[in-house]
Length: 219
Image 1: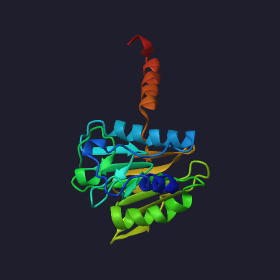
Image 2: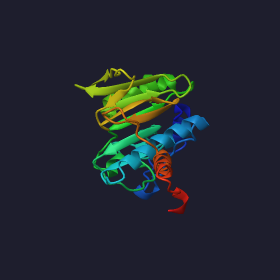
Image 3: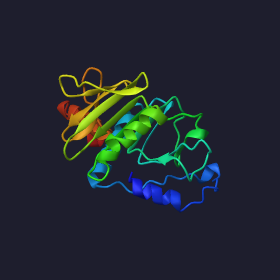
Image 4: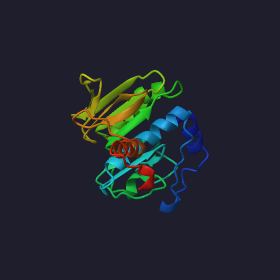
């Protein structure tokens, strides 16, 4: 997440070292704040619940993407705060290694802004994801200032997305809107309905059962 730390990691490893595939663990530093962590976990949890029957995607947060054309861990890596890859096997990974994943890069990336990373996310990473990753959908969000923006790759360049009447931005790749709800970024369906967390859905079901005079704790 922080460029200086990534450069330090790169400089401490000999450029001639080629790691075996099984050793490609994520190199990402801890997330910056509790709110950053909550936001990442929320996005991962909701997409995995919504797509619980799908086996053709991978969603992760604060995980290193290795993309060296020389297949070296010591060069060319980046760790988005949250990303989704489509058309791939749904399984646990230590990191995302492009040369082991049929050359696939993320279809969707979200960076969570902070005072330390905001300029990098808006400029350097945006250029990287546009020109090198060719990631179709790129978003950023600041959970403190509520700055929110999204871009879609068109003819090789990111074009800013226009918000709908609710202030939500459409992700072509996810087939979902993203919008701010109670201070955090959430998914919304194409009809504008909030995608619930598993806990929210369970509470809604429990409330419905109580309306029917059924104690959900006895089921």
